[in-house]
Each structure stands twice: as C-alpha cells, then as structure tokens.
Length: 231
Image (cartoon, rainbow, N blue to C red):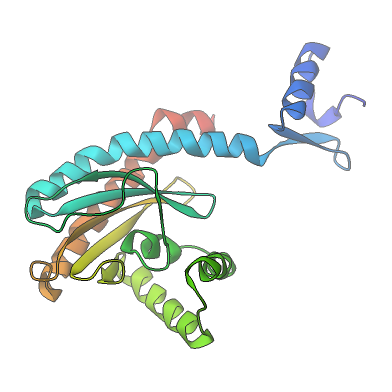
C-alpha cells in the first residue's frame, strides 16, 4: 500500500503508526481518496472522555438545583443512541428513584431522553423510536405522530416533562446539554412527587434546569478536551 499523499508525513515511522491504528480499528484507509479517516471506535473513546468531563461539570449544577428545590436531580449521558444513567443526588422531599448509575433509560418516555430527542434529526429519532418499539412493545403511527408533536413543544421551550410516564406519582423535568457542535450529548432532570411538582412549579423548575444545562454546555465547549479537539 502506497503512502497516502494527502497525509504528507515526513517519514515512514508515522505511516507505521497509522498502519497499527488501522489494525486496531481506530482509523480507516480510504482507497479512493488515498487518505485516512477516524473510525467509530476512536470517536467512541472521545465520547467516553467527554462524558467524564460533563459528569464532573454537572455535579455543581446538580447540587445547586438540589439546594433550590430539594428534589432529586439526575444526569444521563447520550451515547450510541442510548441513554445511560450517569449520576443522581437524592432529594430531601422526593420519591426515591429506581435507576442506578450505568443502567439504560428509555429516551421516548423519560424527560431526560425526550429533551435529547427534541434536538435530533427526524430520521435519527425514528430509528431510535423503532428500536425502543421492539423493546417496549408496538407503537402505533398515531402515537409516533403525537410524540413528534410533543418534541416540537420541547424544542421550543427548551425542556421536557415526564408526567408519571416512568413511575406513577412521579414527575420529571429535563433539559439537554450540548457539545460545541450543538449536538445533545447529555441531559439533567429534576424529579419529585406530583403533589410537589405542580404545573406552576414545573415551569419554574424547567427554566432553572435549562439554565443549568446551558451553562454546562458553554463550560464543556471551553473545556481542555474541546480546546484540544479544535487545535
């Protein structure tokens, strides 16, 4: 295999490193363009690192929300079209949550998930809904249409609401965290009983959760990880 001219390496040592990365499935050689491109496996490593950064940045915001509303605050990471439960600080007056860090949550039912779906392309959302349909049971076309109508509202106001969809007597309000490309990569929600999280209260909580997530989005864009990616 000849040395790809677009890479313009000074010696064969660098080319040898690339060949090793190719064998490990971290890069892929494009024969048509005679150049290398990053493979999904390497992208996944970067995403995992990003999730750690967001996890650390999210904690202070979660504690502030806990102090203000005394409700359970949750953090989830969006990876490979899956919603992974990352962290939780339990509220003083809220219903005890069932999920534990590392478990998966349904994007179509949870406020954490719906806040992310609202900012994804329609075709990608359809693919995610189809996968969850196979896991959770059949969903009618009318149900899918109503789901998109709901996601449009979520996108406009900036936060999603789960009104006893996951657990009876429990309401959640979630908002997305974005990377520097404007893609949703995580979300935070506040959860509590229906007796405490009334309609009026949910609007206030939603605004605060959205504000916290917007601040994390800006911080993650200025983090050393993102700065290194831009160099």
